[in-house]
Length: 300
Length: 330
Image (cartoon, rainbow over all chains, first blue to last red; front, side, top):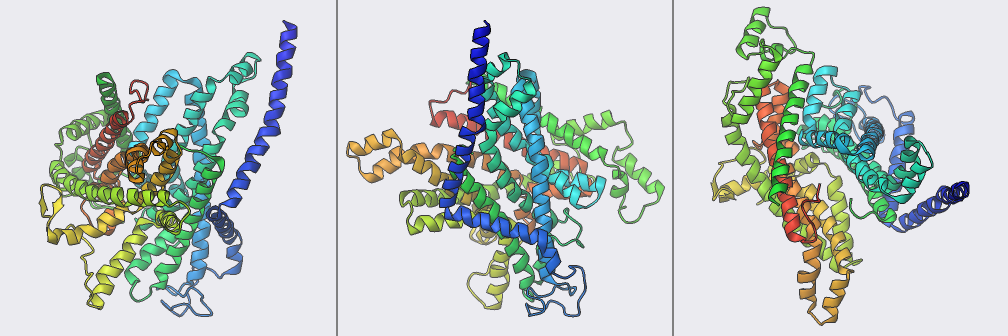
C-alpha cells in the first residue's frame, strides 16, 4: 500500500515538475513563435504598446486638456498639431487624455470582468448540479438584458462617472468569461489527473487553481485581449449616447458626439478622436486574432 | 426532440421572468424617486402635491408586490400605458417591432450575402492579394464604431452630396414614408431611407461572418471527405459547393441566427443615429425617462425574440449536422 502510495507520489511529482517547467514553457514559446510570424498581429501588438505608452506618459508631454485658448475650431497648426475645438481647447491634449481614459476603462473593466467571470465559472463547473443550473440560468437572464439599461440605472444611482461606466460594462462582460470557464471546468473535472489529485488529498481550491484553470488559459487570454477592445468600444458608445463619462472629461466617444454637428466646418474635430478610437480597438482585436491563431483555439 | 423543445420553452419562461424581476428591482433600487422625474422634476423640484398626484396616478404609491404583479400582468398581456404621454404600450410595440424587424431583416440579408461571399473568396484564394484585402478590410471594419461609420456616411450622402449636387443624395434620418410590400420589401422611395441604416447595422456582423467563413472553409477544405471528393474527380466548383461550403456553413448559420435576435432588439446606436423608430432606441429612452411600463414590456419582447432565435438555431443546428443530438445539447 505504502509502495503504491510512494509510487503514485513519485509519478505525480514527475508530472507536476513537467507541468511546471516543460509543457508550459514550450506552449508559450511555441505560441510566441507563431505570433511573431503573423505580421498583422505584430502590428496590433506594436499599436497596443504604443497607445499604452501614450496613455501612461502622454499627459507629461501635452498641455492641460481643459485649458481654454483664444483660437476656436482652428485646423491643425504648429502650436496645436490636432487643432482646437469649439471652446478653444487643444484637441491633441484631449485625444491623449481620451486614450488614457479609454485604456484605463478598458483594462479595469476587463480585470474585474475576468476575476468575476473566472470565479463564477469555476464554482458552476466545479460543483455542477443545482449550483451550476442556478448560476447558468442567471447568466442566461443577464444576457437577455441590454447593457444600456444597466448604464441608465447605475447613472441614476451613482451619477455619471468613470466608475459607473466601468461597473455598467463589467456587469455584462463577465457573462461570456463565466461560460467559457465553466465549460472548461466541466470537461477537466472528469480527467484522470484531477481524480488523482483529489485522491492524494489536494485541496479543492488548489486543484482548481493549479490543475484545472491552466486548461482554460488559452481561451481566457484571447477573451482578455478582445475584452479590452470591446470595453473601449463600449465606453465610447455610452459616452456617445450621453450616458457615459461627464462631458467635461475628455473621452473619445464624447468628443465624437460633440464634434458631429460641427463636421462641415471643422472635420478635424471628428477625425482625430475617431481615428484614435479605431486604432485602439483595432490594436486589441489584432492581438486577440493573433493569439487565437498562435494558441490554436478553434471554437471561439 | 419534442421534449427538448418543451424544456427549452420552459427555460425561456424562467429567463423572461428573471429578466423582468431584475429590471423591476433595478428600477426601484434607484434612490431618486421616479415620481419626481415623472412629475417633470430633474433640475427643479416640483411642488409636493404634484409629486403626490403623480405617484397616485401611476400607482407608484401601492405596495411593491402589488406593483410588481400589475406590471407583470400588463407586460404579459401587452396592456398598460406609458407613463410619458399615456400611450398604450401595445401601440408602441405595434409601431416599433415592425420597424425593427424590417431593418434587421435587411441587415441580416446584407451580412449573409456580403460576408459569406467575402469569406469564400478569401479562403479559395488563400494568401492572395484579394485574401489579404478582404481579411484586412474585415478587421478594420469591426474596429470602426457604428456611430463613426454612420456619421461619415451621413456626411457623404446628406451634406457633401447636396453641396455638390451629386447623385448619391440620401435622406439621413427617420423611417420615411413607411411603405412596404409583402411586409419587408421597401418601395423605391422607402429604399432611400432604408439603405444607410441597413448597411451600417450590418457592418460589424459582415466582418465577423467573412472572417468566420474563411476560417471554417479552410478547416473543411483540409478534411478527408473533401480530399476524397477531389480524388474521385469531381469538378472544383462541385467540391467547393457541395462538400466544403456545406460543412463550413454550419457555424456561420449559428452566428447569423443569434445575430438576428441581437439586431432586432439591440440596434440602439444605429437606430439613434438614423432616428429609426426601432425597439432598442425606445428601450433606452424609456429607461432614461423612467417609463417603467414601456421599458419592461419592450425588454420582454426583445428577450423573447432572442430566446426564440437561439432555440431555432439549436434546432437548425441539429438539422444541418445530424451528428448532433439535441438531448445532449445544453
